[in-house]
Image (cartoon, rainbow, N blue to C red; front, side, top):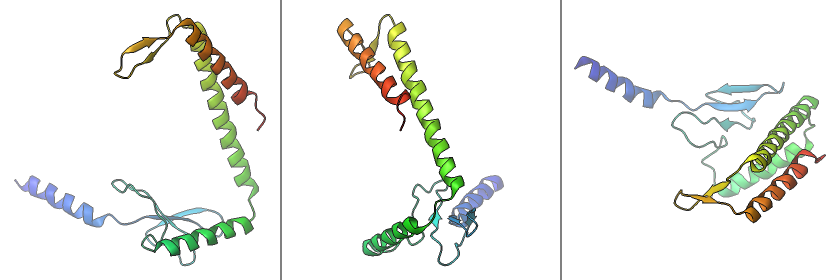
Length: 154
């Protein structure tokens, strides 16, 4: 009985002790976390277990204030110089995503070429086998996807 009461008390206090955690970038460009962001810094509320929203620091502000903050932050981002490391990181992320998309497109095409009886799932989960014309059309679409994704320079 004591264990049940202890567990109930701990569960009750855990809900009360869950504090907000904010994330912001300091003057040196490092990401910082804390329960209170410094004044004048755009902070973001970090999504925690059980907290399914991520909002800005002044989440209770009106829509007009939110629009003003958005316009102000957009103007700041236009003026702020882009760091070379950040640009390189973004380019690496984009190239990694493009490589994954290319590999997925090639795998889809390989399955269409090597598959004997190709099907798609119907409305109720049943298999609907494709006709020869539908398979040829799917193969052409998959090949054009490979050409568009894998061979594009941008």
